[in-house]
Length: 123
Image (cartoon, rainbow, N blue to C red; front, side, top):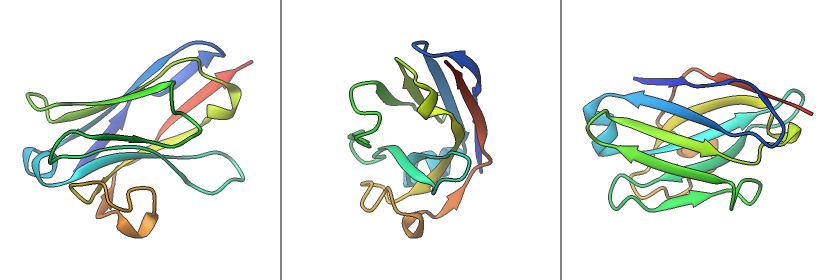
């Protein structure tokens, strides 16, 4: 249902764009959000975009550095992160959530998850 891609090895200060491709139904019915989990840490909500009005939401840890967007022709949600830091190193997951992104950063509000894509930021 959800296919995340775009991870890789990036130097600190660089940027990366992650993609989450889904079905037309999921794209239209659900908000799509991104989580990440670093080694030894809890999973953290990163960003969400509403399917109703396209409103974006960001965690404080990426606010000002991240942009989430939707491409309805490709049924794909993108997460662009700039000024990457070693602390951004994590497995990034996309998930389907409430269409208005209510409770988006909580695991229990996710309908289903995609597989992760690894982002490694070297110092």
